[in-house]
Image (tube, rainbow, N blue to C red; front, side, top):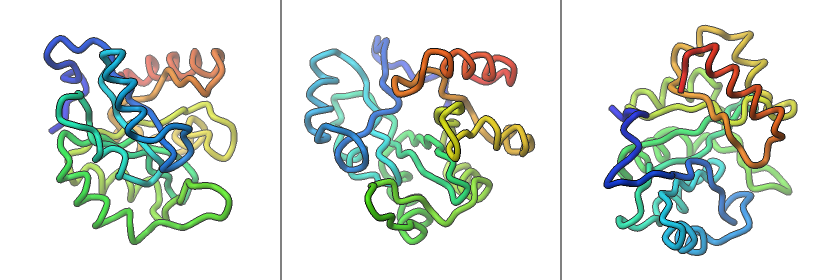
Length: 184
């Protein structure tokens, strides 16, 4: 099973665990994100919305967790990480691809899967499940959803606490919430 404490390897100190490319709502091609990570000496997780092509394009010489940001039918985003490419591909083909809802105007493609289904499917693949940007604006405000559905908190592995798209106030609230939950 993937262990969140084992995210450093070969002296790697920094890992960008939430990065998007033009495959979803990012501004760079995957190859440009990969080049930047190499230049900066960073590990990189490409977590395009409900897509895996970018994640699978990361070469072996860059530390990564194979990943995607999956949107549930409840409009919540979960960052889901795998230790290798094959379980990500299998998970995607078995559960995500057939359940994507193509949306007009954006490349988010939320799924027909509930948050509970999504977490349970990911866990059946020994994936690491992280609540993304818990203090984002409605409807993506996962903090409110999980506080109403506390039993689901037992199934997640971590809370994203630093997100460049969130305000400093939202990030501080995320840190406090993760500490209260005793989650990384």
